[in-house]
Length: 489
Image (cartoon, rainbow, N blue to C red; front, side):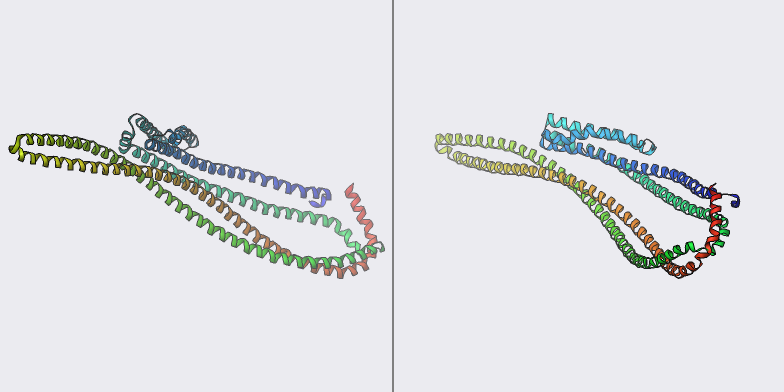
C-alpha cells in the first residue's frame, strides 16, 4: 500500500502514529496517577487522625496535670495547662469526628470516649472547686477516691484502641499506595516499550517504502560525475577527522563507565548505611518510649508521697492538740501539789507524809511538763521535715513533669528522624538503581563507540573508492532531482 503513497504522506503517518500512542499512554497514566493521588490523600488523612488523637490526649493530660498542680500549691498560675486543655480537647474531638466519619468503629469509640472525657473534666473541675472552698485536705481526699484514675484509664484504653486501628488502616493504605505506584510504573514502562516497538515497526515500513522509491535512482548513482569529486575529497578528510574524534570519545566513554561503576558502588554503600540508621532510629524510638513510661510511673509515685506527707502533717497537728491538754493538766497538777504542800506544812507533823507525797506529785508533774515540751519539739521537727519533704516532692513533681514533656519532644524528634531516614534510604535505593542503569547504558554506549570507531576507519578506507566513483554519479542525479520535484508537486 505504501507504494501509492507520497513521501510526505508516509512521513506524516510516521509522526501521527507515535502521537496517537503517546495520547493513549498519557490517558492511562493520568488515570493511574489519579488513583495514586487518592491513595496518598488517604495516607495523609490517617496520619492526621493519629496526630489529632495524640493532641486530644495531651489536652486531657494537661487538664489532669493543671488540676494536680493547683491542688498541691493552691496557686492559680498552675491552672494554665488545665484551662488550655479544657479549651482545646473538645475542638480536637470534633475534628476527629469529621476525620473518621467513614469509619463506624471509630465513631462508636468516639461515642464511648465523649462521656468518659466529660466526666473526667467534670471531676477535675470539682477538685478545683473543693480545693478553693475546703482546702488541700478535702481535695486530697477526693483524689484518693480513685475516680479520676479510673476515668483516665478508661480514656487511655479507648484512645489506645483508636490508635491501634488507625495504625492498621494506615498500614493498609500505605500498601495500597505502594501498589498504585508500582502499577503506574509498570504502565509507564510497559507503555513506553510498546510505543518504542510500534514506532520502530512503523519507521521500518516507512523507511523501506521510501527506500524503494529512491532505490532505483540511487543504484544509478554509481556512475557519478566529476562534479562530486570535490565533495568526495571533503568526505575523505571528514572521515579521517571522524576516526580521530571517535577514538577520543571512546576513551572518554570508557572513563565514564568506570566512574559510573564507582558511583553505583557508593550508592549501594549509602543504601546500607541508611538502612542501619533506620534500624538504629527505631531502636532509639522504642528506648525513649520506655523511658517515658518510667517517668509516668515516677510521677504517680510522687503523687502518692504528697498524699502521705499531707496525712502525716494532719496527724502531727492532732498530736500537738493532745500535748496542749497534757501540758495544761501537768500545770494544774503542779498547782494542786503546791497547794497540798502548803496545807501539809500547816498541819504540822500529821501532814509531813502528805507533804512528801505532794512533793513527789509536783516532781512528777514537772517531769511530765518537761517530757511534753520535748515531745512538742519533736513534733515540730517532724512537721518541719514533712513540710520540707512536701516542698521537695513538689519540686520533684515539677521536674518529672518537665522531664515528661522533654521525653514527648524527644519521642517526636525520633519519629521525625525515623521518617527522614526512611526517605533517605528510599532515595538512596533509587539512586543505586539509577546508577546501575546508567552504568549499563554507558557500557552499551562504550560498545557502540567501538563499533562507531571501526565504522569511521572503514569509512575512511572506503572514501578513496567513493572519490573514484564520484564521476559516475552525474547521470543519475538528474533522475533523482526529477523524482524529488514530482514529490514536491
